Length: 261
Image 1 (cartoon, rainbow, N blue to C red):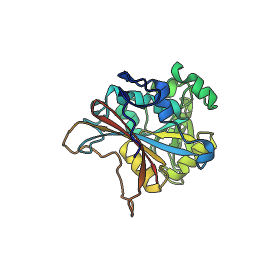
Image 2 (tube, rainbow, N blue to C red):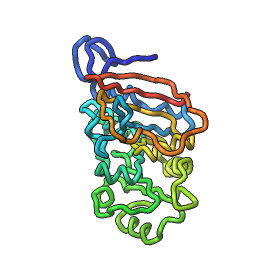
Image 3 (spheres, rainbow, N blue to C red):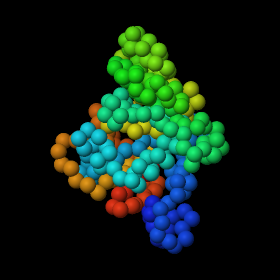
């Protein structure tokens, strides 16, 4: 097991100088870099999720209460490395999604990788029951994508397109086929994919066998209750094994990174 301690550390990590300090964003970006194109099959789907010690992915319907400042630094870094951020419609509503912003700290890194200044947001929605007056649709730096099925209501598709969103058909019926969604995004030039869930969408990616990597923050909190796990829906026939790539720690929060074995 490769252990990198920590995001804040006095002994080890990239560029360690023996002083107690916070890792720079450049160091985090290096630690979480996507595999090089020649080492991956064209497209790479990474998930970023947070869970409490007792398995809750949310508290009161949102992930923020179980997060931390360090978790948000990792969150921002993962977004800055991605071509597109994929999220389910319910997560977009509950978490109040806004457009991803271009960040000066990552500008040169994105230019060198041939990426646009900010990642696009892709919303997975069967019904397209979304508020198209929100900034996510009216003023994104990159047009927001909506992944839906061929049987989606034409009036909702028209409403999305009038708002400036780009509708991408990624399923033959009402819903979205996870594997097809990955292919459609790749055909648009988005090969570094990041999904932030929610649990139902992540479960669909897991069941379809298209998830390449999981970045999981383990929050040192207990919530009890009946909150969702990080992945929901039907179970896979045989559990899929992932290999631990790295482990970071700050103030009891563990930042693990697993790849398909």
